[in-house]
Length: 232
Image 1: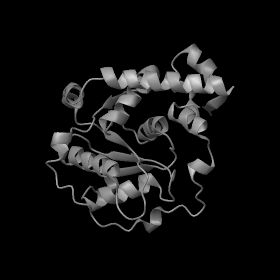
Image 2: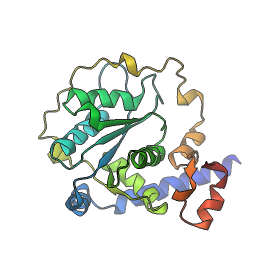
Image 3: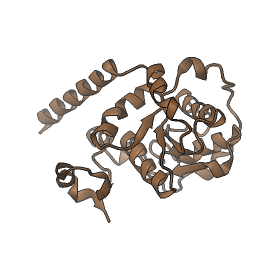
Image 4: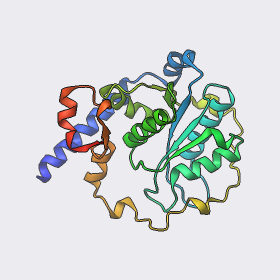
């Protein structure tokens, strides 16, 4: 069993590496999708927060969402992420930073359910549909976004791609605003490291724990494969 797990892990790693190697650049991807703007909403996946300062990854994702909003490319933002590795709910913390940068609170939504990148995309997509948003895009760093291309393609999710363009981002005011993140703490927090093994976390990265809506499983094969995880 361990040998099979290692082989599977290596196969998935090679598959991801191939996706990144042949993926279009951030600039080319934006040229493809920006003409479709404005988007009703963009999805911004979460990053762990240490309770003191945002990480470079969180800064880049929040600042990129701020740029897209203020340029009129995105009308609304969904920040996605549960309390995964630290006690702070990632979606809540990022929303606080977004507000501090001047994004109106009424245009910020939170998905506190997701623990993995695939879940960030899918559960935020479901939240967007619930809010009546039609034009939806994923806005994150190119590495993560390229990892989600195949997931979005496989399930035919109507989610476009707006990866961070580094040169554009570096022209923004990237100073960290002050926030009070105390309200984002989860009192019953248990780190995912203490709840899932490395193999289980890898399975989560590939969407193996997603609870689906049947309408999003477009083929008979997918409905059969994920039938035990279809929500009513």
